[in-house]
Amino acid sequence: MGSVSTTDPQILNGILGVAAFDVLTLETNPQKDEPEGNAYHLVFQKNNHPKFPYILHGPFRDETIVDHWFDATQLDRYWQ
Image (cartoon, rainbow, N blue to C red; front, side, top):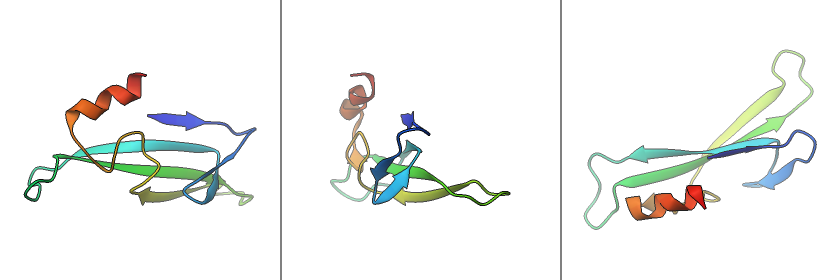
């Protein structure tokens, strides 16, 4: 899941971001009582550097659509 707004940046994970997205991973060897999904949030920040106009920040474990540790039942949140 991602979002973009170059004209209306938002504070995301403490960063003035113009775009952000979640990365969902499958934990192949989860700890006992830990769900098999891990979610991370990444944020793009615009800057004025002529060769590198964006900075990618993250991964962060909060501000994701699902919990950081999630199971498949939470995935419906991306379609709501």
